[in-house]
Amino acid sequence: MLDKIKNILQQNSWSKKLFFILTIVAMMFYGLRAEAEVWQPSANHQQIPIWPEGKMPDAIPVTKPESMRITKGLIAGKPVTQVLDVTEPTITIYSPTAKNTGAAVIVFPGGGFHGLAMDLEGTEICEWLTSQGITGILLKYRVPNSGPNWNEDCQCHVKPYAPAALEDAQRALGLVRLNAAKWHINPNKIGVIGFSAGGYMVADISTHFKKRAYVPIDAADKESSRPDFAIALYPGHMKINEFDETKKEFALNPDIQFTKESPATFLLQAENDPVDTVDYSLLYYIGLKNAGVPVEMHLYAEGGHAFGLRSSKYPITEWPQLVKTWLGTIGMISG
Image (tube, rainbow, N blue to C red; front, side, top):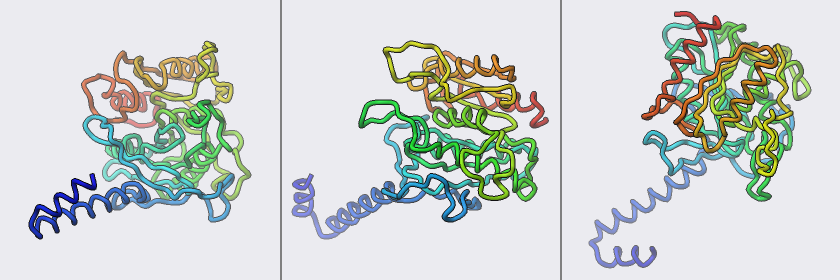
């Protein structure tokens, strides 16, 4: 590469040399920005820190600054923006611009508890919600190691240093209920949606809402953190011994204990998902049915993993209409 640059500088006019140098500098600058920039929402959307300064539970020392990475792999012809090393969790409110149903959905992007697929399973979901008259609340929760995850160093499944993702989810729900009137939300119509690791968070908060996972701080923590409804797409980490191929038990993760008070739930997955197998959704469904909780599940033969809202040739990507119909069925929206 260095020899190639040297030849270009030796063999071309000064104008071509200048253009080449500026191009290299721009590429280097862009590369640095792609890795170092902190994620920001689009115009007219403000990020709100969810924890008062100095009062975040289980805070860990900042070893790396938050950054963004644009994936090389494409989904429906577009890359994915990943947000890494989040230590200051936030919510961003996406309000409907026309009809407002009063319903709201807190969005948990996936990313294996290593990063966050911030556009694919975050902003794009919020934009669709607002188009349906639903307020979208995007949670930028702490990563990495804030939930059960696969550790590359030990090649093993590990539990988090603390239930930080659950803490952030509970706090977000409390904040949304506390500010429901201000944000034009019905406090009895607040649900959650999550993808992959975010789907696990949906199950986690659907079973852990009677008590905060942290010492309550203020009025937001006096509000209920129980979702009024739950939507999980290709949820992860739902199976016991999920990474131990020598153990074949078809059993639900013991950290997830559904009760009759768990919210009505919508599940969707592709049977050929190579990352989070269809067993995870089946176990989720069975757990809810055994607890007497209303649940609707849709399984498709094709579709793979991490498709979000992006359209493809597979019918599974038409899932938003199924969710809209289901939300009407359970009385969260009308029309």
